[in-house]
Length: 118
Image (tube, rainbow, N blue to C red; front, side, top):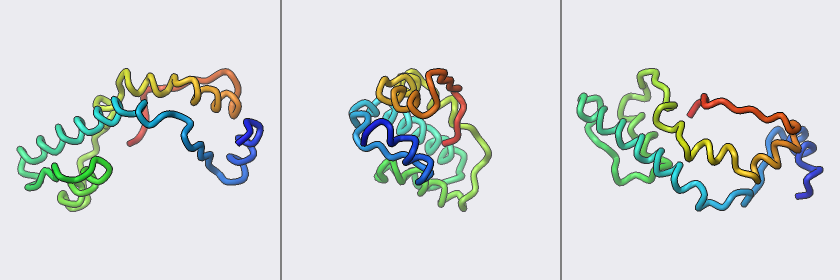
């Protein structure tokens, strides 16, 4: 998609889908960090007796969903920030391809915080 269509697509569709903007291998470290965080939380919940199944066989994309269901779809409010905010996340936020698109959408003054919802 030509660069000048980014704003148009975002405005008309409400989202911007850029396939293959970043090589999937680039996400390996961040995905491992997420997998480790889910595993730590699952083990802590298991140790507390809040769940009986660690769902270790579930793919990472579904593991927390299954754990959450085992808790009756109720979890204590807790941030994932300390688990996910990492060098891997900040490297992603500084990826040149991502910054190029953001600059076209909002201009060169790009700021980000380490807070987000997962």
